[in-house]
Image (cartoon, rainbow, N blue to C red; front, top):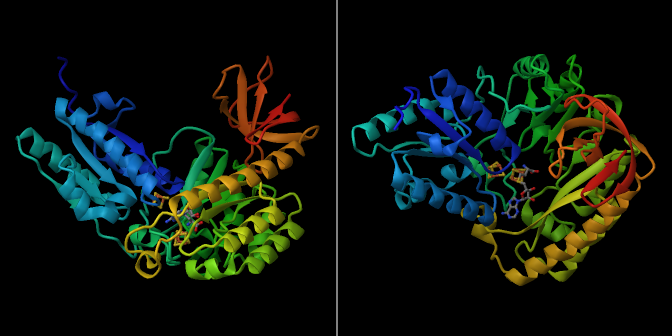
Length: 444
Ligand code: SAH
Ligand code: SF4
Ligand code: F3S
């Protein structure tokens, strides 16, 4: 056996949303600073980290399946396993007790303690006993200021601008796993954007559970995104997710006016029924949402819109569901993420409303909406046929390295034959679209 290099090797796997991707980059940065080394090969790792998601039961299931693979690995050789993120925060004691596999648990606000926890666990393991370490305090202040993320290569850099959520939508676990809302210092955000540009990233995506409640003194989200888009070297700025209940005219105006801000808005609707929206605690009606979409479309005629929908929330009737279908048809989103309602422990809905829509009805409603959305997406994508689109080149297409892949301003995937032309990720190329599916535009 070859001797182990002295620096502990760490492998990290990330589940869940972009916020978790971004957090994993922070974790990597903090651990590297303390002498840990990262490996893409989990077989070689001394420490395996799993950054987890708790948003739906399916997310939990995926992670439990993953943990049982790790259990098998740990039965073969010494290994420190750390579970991070929203599921760690949410299940705390339960996870610690039922999973003897886990050495370290750390929630989203406790990552500064991770190097210490992992060092202790490695040391304990060397001495032949299990040293468990948990850090699960949520903080009202932690924004990881002063830590520059160790970014994944590519054209896009994530920048988290605010953490936590105070909205407490009744179905949602995030306010419990990520704690109270707090915004970062705008100067620190801008410094990160300049640093990303200097490292060759061409696109920035601003992240927050609720980006448009960003505030720091005189700075609101509209001002911040405008300033980020002014950073020289950055060609595209995206953001996710805004909440429809606070989408001020100034934000619409800056998106419309600034050539570097992508004309794509992800605007989670959740339901089209006023009664259900009220039970969800979303703070708007179907008409409010449609009026906002109208204002956006007036100011930005070529805007691309996407959304999130939950089917089968507590007491949702066929009529409520029809209201959602109607709004989907009216707005004509470019794409939609459609989910079955999944009850989360301790949320307002879990405490107040029975999860009473039968599983098979949730399933058929998801399928029906997917069918509507697939048709609309296809129609919208086919509208591009014959048009020239500007594409930011990302990488080789998944199917073949003879093909290139990139995204339009509206975040639609385009694939084309590379041929002998210039192919450089991070640069722009213009292609005429000659065919379209519901997932992809084909350019030449
Ligand atoms: N902060 C983001 C949402 C993050 S969660 C926002 O407000 O836009 C992403 C999506 O997951 C939500 O928009 C919602 O559609 C879905 N979701 C959240 N909780 C859910 C639950 N309990 N069951 C099913 N879907 C859920
Ligand atoms: Fe969850 Fe609502 Fe907060 Fe989004 S805004 S994270 S759905 S509570
Ligand atoms: Fe999941 Fe946490 Fe993101 S619950 S969706 S990883 S905020």
